[in-house]
Image (cartoon, rainbow, N blue to C red; front, side, top):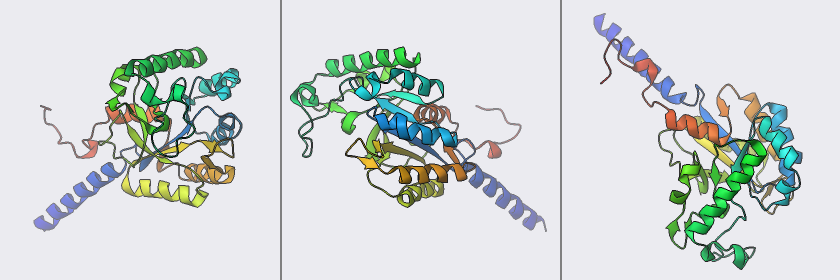
Length: 275
């Protein structure tokens, strides 16, 4: 009888530990961040209304040169006031022109022709521009084209004091205690159906990980595009499963992960002094 009691207690403790480990994202199974690049008109016209209808907030990485920003600053200011995150996507969106498929890169904004100081100066200038839009000083960053180096030299060290975290483009889902805040991976969205996007969320729920979506066009305006229908189906699924999925701006998730205590509260030894 005594052995049975001990085994029951051990199983209960294991269950508590497992449940705690499975609910690390603000007591939910996973975290999802919806991020949108390039300051497109469809962000304001399609994406933000869809998010607002579900009560979700997204992260919008804005490049200072984009007419989708400069022509619609009052609307971006309103979006920020309503809780959407405005992130830094550099001033001129420089990318390395050497990889194949980069014919869109002009010499003036080829990252191979930059110095670390030049990209750092342009990033800091973009932060000043964004502050004039939303009044905020805390910010996250997204690497244009996922390029993290200037001629082989990583440039985030030169700007990291400006940011809470940076989003890259490497495909990955991350455990809460295994995040490189200088280059958090994501899943690029381009042509997927709603069911395909939802399947990624289900995988994140099963693995208790962070899933960051990277959108460009939502219903047009960019060669990397997803239909409004697919985007809406994803948002609806997230809303229907809100009890198990924490949907939040990238900054909120990054700050939470950095402060997270990986020791499950339910199984901490009782009445013992912490060393």
